[in-house]
Image (cartoon, rainbow, N blue to C red; front, side, top):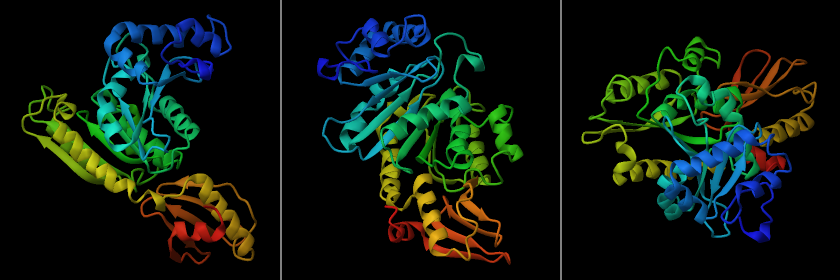
Length: 366
């Protein structure tokens, strides 16, 4: 990191490992896990690591001190048009995501956020972050950067793809954060015996946990494990996410591609980015939870007789982020499926009040 930033909480070119630990304000022992993993990452591929650091990539220890995140954005002084969040395959490093996506991100003005989700040894489930532990770290980093809902291109490769389904459910149905505008599952199917997918199937995230999510998928006809990560697996995954409410906007079936063929063929990448760009054009209609809360509170003050008592807790039931008013048994919610505002009155009549964004503007919430 440049000396004018003082290395506070961040590692950049010119800051050593000791400076990184000192900047975090904790002892070497307290930071041993994050620090040793960072050192291991650097040793694993010095060329890619140097590439990332040389481009002023911001590197931060995760809040649990188990790993780290990498954030790169174009040096334009402008807010990035979007954010690419890659999730690597097995034995992957966070700097791989920056290295592989950098040229495309620079071309289109996107930032990149990459989490080190493998702990550096082993292949068991606990040698990686589980989705329920990984998603809050990614969401916190996105919030810290002021990233808007619907503006993230989340993509998982191989083992990362196998976890993309649970990550999408957490983003949309479980938390209602709705950062992900497009999810790409790249050569990793939705295994029926994987506990997070079993939770989705059992209804733990609601009847349609993927409602409102736009999805892309990639498979290579030459993938050596067709039933795990090849085209039969990805076709089944496509049907499964659609069953649970997703809209699959792109399915790349590459006749010449193998397991890693998505990134090896720039046409595949550009096709996915074109879908992402089209989605980004609509993000102005997406409300964050905080904006929805502001709108609900305005409604309670404006229509007090209907929406009472005021300030009930906001809840999530995909695709809705909503409040229930026990005094009149009325529900008001914003749907992630179409970003409309809905009202369900005490008689059970559902009214579509139209796009939520104009209501939010009227309420002074944007």
